[in-house]
Amino acid sequence: MVLFFTAVLSFMPISELRGAIPFAVANGIPWYWAYLFAACLNALVAPVCWIFLATLHRLFYGTDTRKGMAWYKNFFDRFVERARKKLAAGVEMWGWIGIAVFVAIPLPITGAWTGTLGAWVLGISKRRTMAAVILGVFVAGAIVSAVVLLGIEALHLFVKKV
Image 1: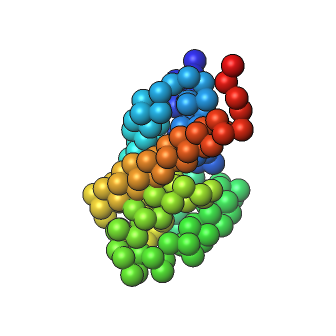
Image 2: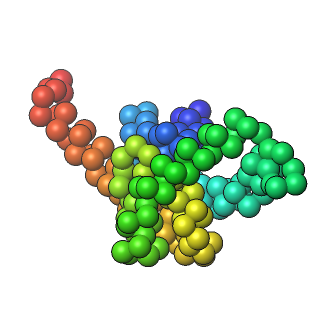
């Protein structure tokens, strides 16, 4: 059951690795397995997001000849504009490596979902997007794992084992 919730957390846009790795480690999974499991699942976000943007997005958003869903169009336009503002400067300077760096920063709203969407909006190729997101996910996973491990060790300073 722990692996199921770890998988769900690693795939959710709000938590991704920041929630999955600490959850798995707190529930007894060794940090290296938690890192590999969560990072591999989080790396799958890029192809899933790309497939969504290439297929279902067109149905929901609509075209000139077909009306889409108004609530989806409003939500998507706001989300895309926010992603574009966050990513545009870095991508102009660094290219696809800018996407990898953006994804690698383990802060809220800087993960595989936003990185893939931003790359799609900015017209970066599918191959470069996948490479950037996978690289960024594994770096972010290493950072989160290090913070979790350091946090556990720091906790031992204040809690005496009996």
